[in-house]
Image (tube, rainbow, N blue to C red):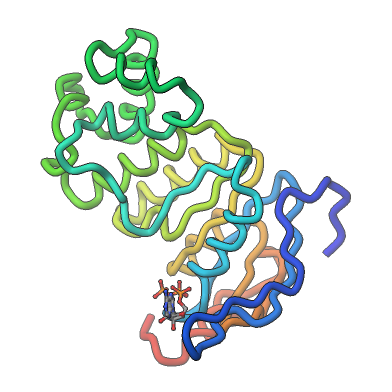
Length: 230
Ligand SMILES: Nc1ncnc2c1ncn2[C@@H]1O[C@H](COP(=O)(O)OP(=O)(O)OP(=O)(O)O)[C@@H](O)[C@H]1O
């Protein structure tokens, strides 16, 4: 696949074994800067494991959005998002934030939360504990935390699976616009074809397809899911 841009993410013959099972089998991969890539494949194919390897190999550049929201339930929306930049700030600044958040941080997170439809016109929702948001909203808080990291590469494991189809497209476009490179595991092949220029399919720990979306048909992708009904 010709692309002269510098490589943003690279794996070279990476294998991952857990217990008796080899989950990734000598996977090699180069993702150029500027590309939006969907990782697809049936459940258990190794998508999360592949994303984990990409993240571990490029930790400093990556904004990471895991499959489970991973929020602190009793902390409010604001503080859960603020955690995205904990490591970029001093311990003192982080403690001060818990007592008296800076206006600039509050405003920035409010803008982000609004853009993801989390405030519904009510700024007080910024101070509502995460556990009082719905599953889909909690996923969007997790996304806001990843976006707040402001890194050049976004890696997300099913980042829009709890968001309805219409909003999922908008949210993926928003993620794309905020990062130079995006790699997301998606179970929805339509979404993958519509929002990502390159599709990488995994099966049983191996890459079985790696093509530009413009060169693949929907049926070709559906054939990768023989046991699932669409
Ligand atoms: N920590 C672990 N210990 C043992 N086996 C594991 C571990 N993590 C994952 N696996 C196994 O590795 C395989 C791939 O898992 P992985 O989560 O990467 O798949 P996936 O394609 O992301 O699946 P899904 O779409 O269901 O999230 C599965 O068979 C899973 O049971």
